[in-house]
Every structure is written in C-alpha cells, then in structure tokens.
Length: 464
Ligand SMILES: *Cc1c(COP(=O)(O)O)cnc(C)c1O
Image (cartoon, rainbow, N blue to C red; front, top):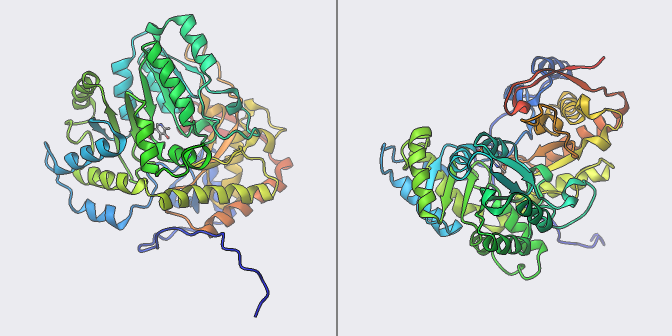
C-alpha cells in the first residue's frame, strides 16, 4: 500500500465525447508561410492551418446531443415556427423578459437597439467598450463614455468585481450632459475587454437605483450573463447557496432589456436575442427586424437554430457545466502563472489574457505588441489567439487618431466543451517557449487598415 495521502480536489467535465473532429498538425515552416499570407492577423488565417483554436468562444462551442436532437425538430416555416415559440418561452422563463425578437447574432441585436434608443448627439455610458457594441452606438449617433472602475484598467490588481461601474463617473457624466442626453446605460458582464471581469449584484443594484432616480434606461449586454452569475455565486456575500438560474433571474430583474450573442452562453453556433420588458421598444424592434434580419419569428435564423438556442438556455444554467467551463479557464491561467507569464488578474470567465505590455516591454504600442505576440504564438505551435489592444481599440471617429488603450492584451479564449486538459497543457508550453525567447521578437507595421472594426481585416508586416 502506498502511504500517499489522497486529496480529492480534482473535478472533471460533466459530459463525455461522442463525436470527434480531427485537427491538422503543421510544421513551423508552414505556419510561418501561413502567418505571412494572413498579413500577421490571426483573423485572416485559414482555420485549416490552426492546431488549437483559441481565437474566440463565439459560435465555436460543442453542442450537446440534446441540442443536436433538437436540430432535427426544426420547423422551417417562414412564419410562426414552433421553435420560435419554444425559444420565446425559454427567454421569458430564464431571462424574465416577456418580449423577444430573434436576430442572426449579437451585433444585429446591437444594431437594432442602438437605432431605436439613440438620438444623434446622445451619450451611452458603459462598463468599458466592446468593439461591435460601441460601433453600433456610434453609428446611431452616440458618444460612448467608459464609466468602469479604474481597477479594470490595471491588469495586476486583484479585485473580485473589476467589471463594476464607478457611480461617481456616471454621476459626473449625467451632471455634465444632462440625463435626457443619456440614451441608456450599457452594462456588460463579465467585461470582455477588461479580461472577462464580472460586476457584482450590489453594484448593479446601485446602478439601478441611480438610473431610476434619473429616469435613465438600463440595458445589458447579456452575452455572458451566466458567467457573471457564476462569479456572483462564488465571490459575493449571500449568493453561495443560490442557483445560477436564480442569480441570473435576479440580475435580469434590474434591466429594462438585454441583447445577447447566443454564440457564447447558449453554446450554439449561431444566433442572437433582443429581449425586453418594454412593449414599445419591442414593437419598434419587431418592426426593424423585418427590414434587416427576417420575419420576427425567425430573425435571420433557421427554425433548427432557434431550437438549439432554446435547449442551450436550459443547459447553460447547470452549475457543473459552467463550473467546468470556467474551471478550465482557471486551470489554463494558473499553469501560465507557474511559468511567470504575465496575465490579467483575477483570471476571467471565458479567456486568459496575456499582458502583452509586460510580455514584450521593448515593443512600443505603435508597433502593436499584442498583435505581435498573437502572431508569434501561432508561429510557435499553431495555437490561435487574438489581439485585444490598440488594433481592436480602433480610431477616434472625431480626430482620426488611434485610441491608445491602457491594456494591450492577447486573448486566449476557450470554446465551450471543445478542448481537453491536454490541449491546454500544449498551449501553455508553447506560450512559455515564446516567453523564453521574447527578447528576440520585433514588432509589426500596419500596411492595410479597413474603416470599421479594423482588427478583423487589418494587415501587417514584420519590422526588420
Ligand atoms: C460576441 C459579442 C458580441 C457580438 O455578438 P456577435 O454574435 O459576435 O455578433 C457583443 N457583445 C459581447 C460582449 C460579445 O462577446
């Protein structure tokens, strides 16, 4: 008998693998060629040339057998599909929003809600910008104002709720421009661009009271609301015994409406939600969806897609499912830390974010340190990540100058239910090797820049 003491602290996924998809292994030489052809932009790589794809968790999730079975029950009627009514009932049951419009993905819902609620010259305060969200707010004529707490901009500060809104900043804006100029407060959680950081229920309650007092609408980008609910359960006093479903429902109680990219929490490959308690906003949205998406009972989706979403809603609030998802992200982050690799703390919900400013301190922001790091990691091992720094931040629409974000990050995002611990170990070792050789890495120069959301299509050349 071994005298090794048994400590039961490991957990494993609450599912097993039924279908597998082979992935291609490439050589370093092949990857160097592929990276060059892609203009050193990981968004422009062919998926075929990627070994472990941590570009995004958006639409890259593995659906369950329950969801796949639902796909066979798609009612592809042009009008009044039964899957629409099923999905509508789940949105009401779990998000507490009685009025619902499906959209083909999250940004379509952002487009519609921005056009409805924003007048030219309005302001939209939010807890840090998100790329597509801010763009649609600006296209509708608003100025986005970041009112997140200062801690969110400092990668090494450990704060349990770095996604919180700073009420003093919000109050200052309202005093400056007047409440009537605020189209709505745009709250998201966990905050993607801050490193997947949640807001607390207490902060939400305070924002709600503030909004009520000033008669300002309060809307949420609820794309990862379940992940935010998980962090509230773990970190906030009074919530440890509540279920994820209860916390989600309580959270939703404070919002007038939500938009959701179903490609995240709902574990599907495509889909979006616009849902509200306001009948007037709903009627406008239902009318607009016909112009831009499709009839209001399919919104650019197939019936089968809506069925997968409805079933995804049921699965997303399961504690073991969300625990395994966030637990895998945590495992990834902890392993990187063991190598002394600088990451955003605390480790976020959907991704680990490398602090590229610390990783490559010799590369100035004008030479795109995070873009460079994402490229080097791909070339090293075929692991694909994405830039979340100056390229993603884009330009100020008024001055045309780069936005210079404080954070220069590389995001390594885990799709839900897709990769194993062994994949994570391989990714960690590859990043550690790049870290070891970091002094020899040079920056990039942008040679092509599209007008909107440039990070998707910009092209670069290596500095000599
Ligand atoms: C992905 C995402 C969106 C946009 O949704 P799409 O489905 O990609 O159009 C909006 N907000 C957040 C927080 C997201 O992560």
